[in-house]
Image 1: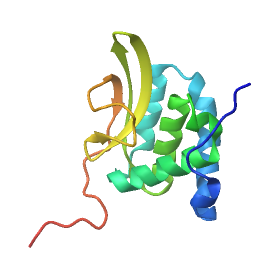
Image 2: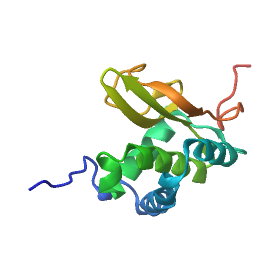
Image 3: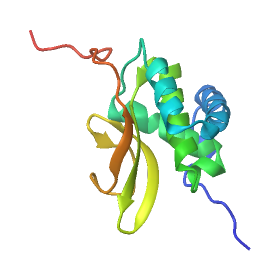
Image 4: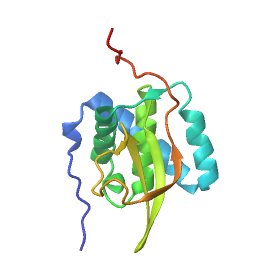
Length: 148
C-alpha cells in the first residue's frame, strides 16, 4: 500500500496563508484541462498588474501549496506550479511560470522560477528545457529601490 506524504505540515503555514493556498490549489485544478496555448494566454492575462515575485515570496507560496495539497506535494507538478503562480498573484506578484521537457529520457515538467532560478526544485537549472514560459511583466519589485 502506498501513502501520500508531505514534507510541510499545514500547521507550518499561518492559517490566513493556508486559506489562500487552498483557494489557489482549487482554482488551479480546472486549468489542468486547458491546452498549452490557452494556459499560456490565461497566465499572460493574470500576470498583468503584478510585480515580479522574489525567490523568497515564490518559495513561501510553493511551501504553502505543498502543505495544503498532497497532490501538489507529489507528482502534480502542473497543478503545483499553477497554484504557486496563482497564490503569488493573489499577493500582487508573479513568478515566471514554466512548462518544459527533457529529451533523454523523455519527461515533461512544470515549475516556477523567481530571480532567474527554479523555486525549490530537485533538478538543477537547465535540466528541463522550457517550451512554454510566462515571465512577469518588467516592473520594479515592491520595496526594492536602487541606491541613491
